[in-house]
Figure 1 (cartoon, each protein chain N blue to C red):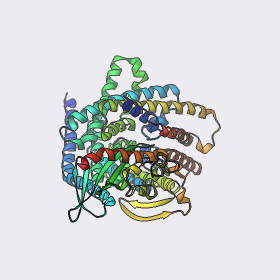
Figure 2 (figure 1 turned 45 degrees about the vertical axis):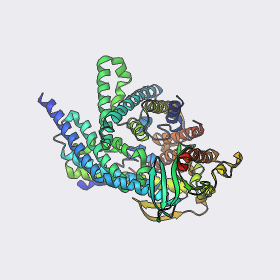
Figure 3 (figure 1 turned 30 degrees about the vertical axis):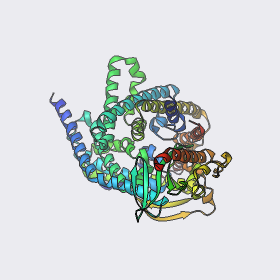
Figure 4 (figure 1 turned 90 degrees about the vertical axis):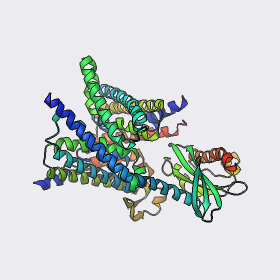
Amino acid sequence: MNELLALFLKYALVNNFILVMFLGLCPFFGVSKRLSDAIRMGLSVTFVMVASAIITWLIANFILIPFNIEFMENVVFILVIASFVQLLEMIIRKTSIGLYRTLGIYLPLITTNCAVLGIAEINYTNGFSFLGSIASSLGGGVGFILALVIMSGLRERLEISDVPESLKGLPIAFITASLLSLSFLTFGGLRI
Amino acid sequence: MPFKDFSKGLVKANPLFVLVLGLCPALAVSTSIENAFGMGLAVIFVLVLSNLIISLLRNMIPKDVRIPCFIVIIATLVTIINITFKAYLPSLTESLGVYLPLITVNCIILGRAEAFASKNPPLRSVLDGVGEGIGFLLAMLLISFIRELLGSGGLNFTILGYKLGEFTIPVFSSMPALFFIMPTGAFLIIGLLLGLFKKTGVLR
Amino acid sequence: MKENVKRVVVLTIIILVSSLSLYAYYTSTEDLIREQETAKLTEEINQIFPDAGRFVQKEDIYYVYSDDGDLIGYAFKATGKGYGGDISILVGVNNDEDLTIRKISVLSQSETPGLGTRITEDEFISQFNNKPIDAIKLRSNNGEIDAITGATISSNAVVNAVYTEYKNKIKSIQR
């Protein structure tokens, strides 16, 4: 149990997916302007991350490794993630319009989100167990939401503050992210 | 003008500084010139070949399955570069870590495939790939130059395992500004560079 | 209907071509990758035992022989929990009466640059050279190893990893 908690905290705080490992930056700078969008986007990314961690773990341990075709890992993982996301989008659109409006619109963006393939690759190269993979992907997702939410709050304020002309927009967002990342570095001292 | 396809990627449509694509490797492996060069070359290889293959197949691939097809082609090329690096440059593979397989989801590559190669003939697509690739490499080198110089107090020109030279700033190198090789420094440098380019207008 | 068939056929062909070419390329480089891995291990062991001729692996312990075929020592890997993640260490043990530590080397680590990363520097590492295992504790713990100022966690991780793994492995070495 401690192992799992340690993995969860490692990817949520110490190795925060966005601020320390730089995975999933496009939505971080693109979507994170409004708090409600940030939460929805974060939830759908977390869901896809956990689901693909489970699927890729099963594929790696029951197909790739037994049949000795580990070199196909990259191709298989991305293909599985892409088809899973597509399937999910179709199901959500058919079953619930409300859910589709809240989460579905972000789904096409998620296939090429580094965080999703990233967690699959991390679980695979570190050889995490089944539960370990779930813990790490859940941690990664929570860390993703955390960074996205903090950033959206900051950017809402930045809109109305007096920023030098040439730093307006993306440059100041990067500098803000830099300071945020500095504060996440202190989690490195967690004894886990 | 095919030359324009090549030259626009260098400055006017620079993938990193103008289109702001491919951020994840740009921040993560720009800690040293050696890593930045390795990542830049890997991206050029994948980008040029994926542009070529996709452009050659552009009339054969049905429109609604084009994205899965592109992804498989790109992932195959990434695996090839991954195996090559493992076989010839094991230490570079280790320092690039998870970011090497993640080239598959680098927005630059899928972006060029979708926006350019799937609509243009092979020669122009290759030129576009070379231009965007070199633009990415140059941007990576600029970021890593600043980060390594300030963060490790010197520069180590090692390219694909061959050491070309070394340079350390006396006194400063024993107590460098480590801040810059940490994730924090990566965000700061890119933010300041973007601001500087906006102010001087060189990228317009 | 015809469109649907075409979609499936094109995607299948692309995946087939992709897997076949990857298979061909992978099998042709497989030996080279394995060679690189052995070369790396040999180099790491040679750093600890410059006079090593060859080594044999048995249950995670490398038995190192000189050119003349004499057993000169043992080597094994140890892992410690540092500040920034796992620290992987190669430990060399002399084949003498007390089985003293020959030398250690840090294979990989992700400590804070400039502070924790100093565990890889000679100033810290050389403290382990030719010491009996009972001295491998921090000075604050009645040992003979000085921790790096500002990086006690990293220093302690190395010391603990070496000590614990030594105690684990020593039984099979003595046998």
